[in-house]
Image (tube, rainbow, N blue to C red; front, side):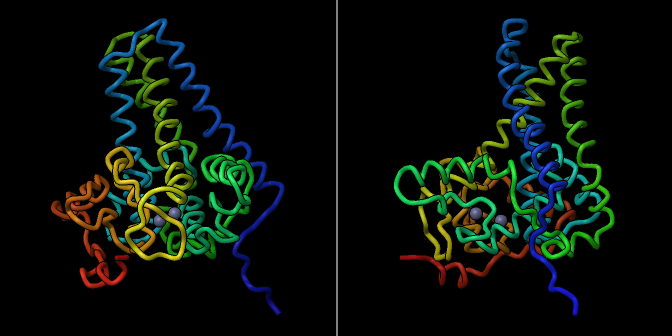
Amino acid sequence: MTEPRKKTVSSPYIHRLQRRHFLLFDVAPILGTIAAFAFLAVRPFGVVEFALLAGMWLVTGLGITVGYHRLFTHRTFKAGPGVVVALAVLGSMAGQGPVLSWVALHRRHHEYSDRAGDPHSPNLSGPGWRGALRGLAHSHFLWMRRHEYPNVVHYAPDLIRDRLLVRVSRLYYWWVGLGLLVPTVLGGLLTLSWTGAVAGLLWGGFARIFLLEHIVWAINSFLHRVGTRPYDSRENSRNGGIFALVTLGESWHNNHHAFPESPSFGLDWYRPDPGYWLIVALRRCGLAWDLKNPSADRVAAKRLS
Ligand SMILES: [Zn+2]
Ligand SMILES: [Zn+2]
């Protein structure tokens, strides 16, 4: 008799990889950001530093929200191979894990949201303010040190069949490296100096990874505890409307849990959602299609009065 397929896998080897990833991509960007501030003594923060920080943040952030999240995890629209590869590569540059792992973890988050099995719930760490603080630290950051690894065969069979995406996912470490190389080279070329190259690496590379990570993690931590709850959903997800622009639309998190199939997280035109604006722009260019926006009736039916 064959055993049923396991939903998670756990081994010393996997936990070693998780620990290495945590140190390289979660701890090192903190040190890199401190170094960026220290480097201000050598080179002040100017237009080039700002452009590299903001530009790299925007393209890799769109890679995460439009690519990793809305396209690959939830299949909220369809796109051709060029857009698929571009979004997967840009998302990989964010240093938040290979696309297959990210998708499997996030699908498990939706399956078990705020219940045992959720990889990062802030609501399962005990009562009182101590439990709340422990939960926030766990869900924001600390869970990544060591966690159950969701079985990608179970959680992402559709992605495993996509050979192009599997190949992009396998080259993950190279893409993160490319995400550090691009701002370094641009910083050097734009200023014609070595200090410009170092500033490009520090601001467009490490500080940008740090900034985007904490924005994405704040969705997992704070927006499962505080904020508004306009729609009925079984977990404790919340909206944080004032953060809509800086999170590229991700902060409509209660909307998203209520309608995970929707490419739009804002749901209405008056709620800013830059990730959705990109999807609409891609559709206008014929590069995205089959947007699965929920009907007005379905949205109204889930609305809490
Ligand atoms: Zn989601
Ligand atoms: Zn969530």
